[in-house]
Every structure is written in C-alpha cells, then in structure tokens.
Image 1: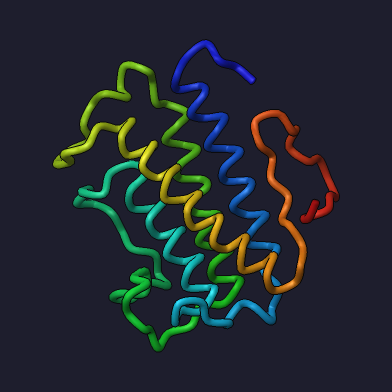
Image 2: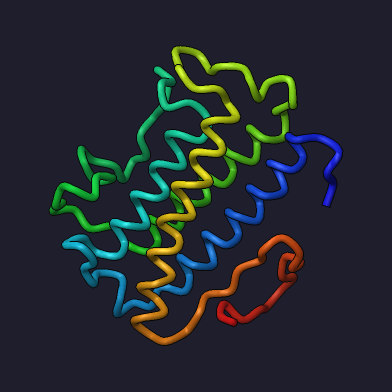
Length: 173
C-alpha cells in the first residue's frame, strides 16, 4: 500500500471500503432482502447507504448531480415508507456506477485539493470523504448485523492488511 500522500491513502482505503461494501451486499440472502428492520426493508437500508455515498462523497451541492434512474422521491429516506421495491440487480448496477464514479474522482484528486471546497459546498473535500466513511460504516455495521442475525455468518472484510481476493473466494469468514 502506497502511503506517501494523503490522496493515495484515501484512494486505497476507499477501494477497500467499496470492496467490503459489495461483499456485504452479496452476503444478504434472498430471504432477508425484503425483511424489515426498523420498519424498512433490508434493500432500502442498502440503497440509503449507496445513495448517500453517491451524493455526498464528492459534492452534495452539485447542481449537475443526476439521480439514478431507479430513484424516486424519498426512496433513500429511511424515515419514509416507499411503495417502490428495488431488485438486487438494480442495487448492484447502481453500486457499479458509484464505484466507477468515485474511483475516477480519486484518480485525479491531489493532497492540495483536499482542503478545497467543491462548488456551492460548505464542506471541504476531505470533510466530505471522511463523513462518508463514517456514514458508510455505520450502515455497513447494521447490514452486517442483519446478516449475522439472519443466517449466523460473518461477511468477510479486508481490514487494513488483508489482500484483495483474486478469483473465487468465500464471502464469509
């Protein structure tokens, strides 16, 4: 792992977080996909986590931000019951778009830019990234808890040192 710049560290840790996020999503069994937790289905907790990452990681005030095609008003809001249901395929496709968008952003992000403020935004780029790590892992922990409680298996994570799996791997520890 390269650690000579803050932007390289952020890039590496974000790649690890995105891998873990996808693995946890893949660990949700079909029987838990629509199961409600705090009156919201598991898939909506996942969508909330994804939508927040999409909107807030780079610039929540971006006037050119385009909602995903699957979005409708309050679909990301865990305080509002939705009539729309998202499939695993829709969620996975959305994840892939976010993964690509964030990795492209990080490829050009420099240390000097971390304390800059995106257009129309009151938060620095570094603040937005750190806040999303906090938010992401709060929800990841909840979803992992749903899985552990539901099927008794612990989704695999990378931590700081475990290498990214190459090829087939067990989704669980």
